Length: 534
Image (cartoon, rainbow, N blue to C red):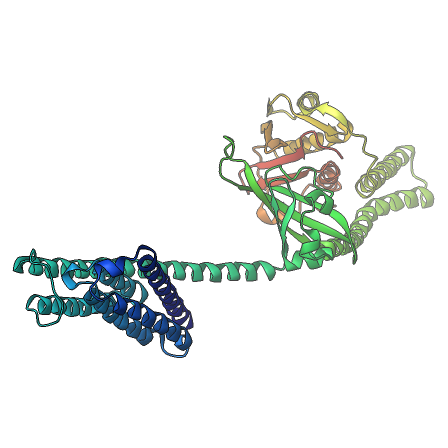
């Protein structure tokens, strides 16, 4: 209610100011041009009326703010109607020049108070003005008029002025109603906008992640509370700084949908930051459509997460070492037992030449098996140094497939589809070992024959090499374990082949994925970055 009251008070101030201005202009015109002395029947009374209006204006200013605005406005407009009617009387009645002032009062009432007030003032003006003209016609008031005026002139004068008053009241009321409705809607929209702005600001300020808004040049405009606390600076201090001065590990902020991680120095020490940058599309400017109007960056502190990842990785490695130790002990126990039995027989008994040769072959075979187990374990736990070099994956894979084709068992067919231009940065010997191991696993899965399909292609900036066989497949519960060290379903073998292959691909920034199911073959997909670096 207070804003509405303040608005009405402001309108009454405008009415008082306009009245004082108009009375001053009226007095000045009468004085400068000496109009009243020649044209009006009561010139002195006109000047007295102007003095009274000045006095009322001063009184209005004094009472403004001390009384209720709406009744005070009605009171002023009513006195104004009386004053205008007196002015019309003093300046000749039907011959007066000032009936238009009543129309101005109707306009003022409709604007200041509302539609109803416009009709009230129009009715009051019509009654007073029409009565005065009627009384003048019947010569019941001492207000003479020229012989050129007839009855119909009086009637038409009253009709035209009353019609003008009510039309003005209607139009002013309609326009005032439309203006009030529009103002109300605008005020509601403004309130909604302020509330939405406050809500958005509250949400952004209370986000646990840092958020910054940058202009088209990458300079910071807004920084929320979490981001300022993370970096140890305030929003005003960071304003205007370029994003690369805040996050130097970003290569180019203009690239679409940047995701990056890096370290920055803060007053609280070094922190690892993960961030995402989006471009905000703006309107076309200078004939260039789709130019970013700014950039939005969301970032968070990954320091604790990275520390926990390192701790988890360390725990995982210790758990793996424990598991490996148990598996190695199990794998070594069998050949050691066989080797011990052969040596004891050679030591205690006096075997014949043929038995001695047999025991010696057993001992040598078990020694080879022990050596193979230790070699595979060392390759997994301490892989050979990686020596990457630029190479075309298609040529390396083609050479490997030639070798694979010669090692394929009877009844197994191989086919290959290799896209050209698959350039990578990798160690050719270790990559060859991965492909060869995957092919041998596929052959072992097809003892009765089948088909091995190899497909190398480009997808999402990566090289994807598929090894798909038509063997018996791998059950879901086994598929989760095939990359574990020493896990195997074969009668022979150490179970380190796929573990070593996965380790090699991880060293190259890639991975191996398995899709399979019992009875439908297996698909191993090698994924590695194109033109990647180890």
